[in-house]
Length: 101
Image 1 (cartoon, rainbow, N blue to C red):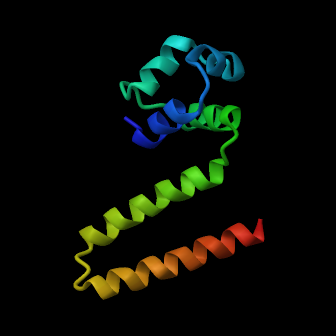
Image 2 (cartoon, rainbow, N blue to C red):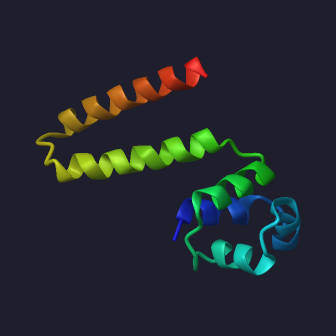
């Protein structure tokens, strides 16, 4: 289940029917996504983001940040300072990549 997508759909101000019309995705499937009962494919997420007017880069960069934190926790970072340094470096890289686009 994708909690961020669920939140985006529910806060979009669009009805499930309108979102269905804009994306070509069945209304019943959008309803399941809005309730968090299904996990969509990347292509589906992109269709929904475009229909709502959200940037896919922001969505997927945030997802990567979340994955990075999970990896860092698993690698047993010793201090909060180490974690903060790595997060700061990641954000600098992310900003640089966005500027280059």
